[in-house]
Length: 79
Length: 141
Image 1: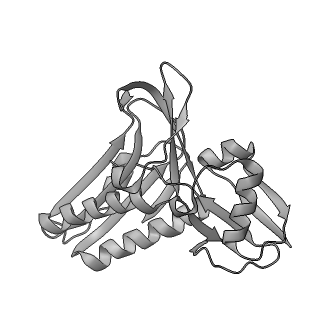
Image 2: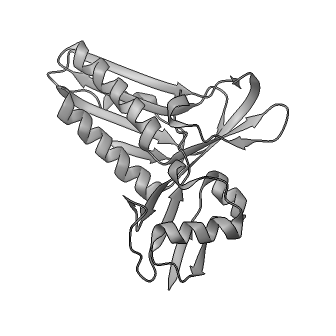
């Protein structure tokens, strides 16, 4: 399946771009993060990140559908 | 009202949005760009947001403030982009019949925005390269 990834802050720096479309065998958010972390060298453990799918917060067991927009959110620092 | 802004925050306009006939107290908070952090000299900040989700989460926080406190108006705007020293990065305000609700709501909004809204800060240091800040929840200031 294809997933649309958006990257922010340190994750964007690690990938070198603001987003990409990836073809993956991963079927849930946790498996997708493991795959991307290995490919891009992400150093955040999953418990330091939040996850959003299609613009809404969700959990690490969220089952993915083709063409979902997936965002792994590093710890926020607004204000 | 909550918004993410790519242009400088118009504080006077936001303060005006807090007015209502029954208001007896107005409390505002301005978060500004300072010239240092953790002992390092800073000459500017850049903020980045996941705009769609930041807007949705900010709207939820404002709704929560209305639900929790006896307020008339609640307003919060967060800047994104490149900011110079002294610029307003985030503005939160609450108006109410009495001061306690206005203070409590304003504090609630800024604390929740800092903890939950997907916005990230990059510090530009006088000496050395810039860095994104990704604080541990317990260490967030």
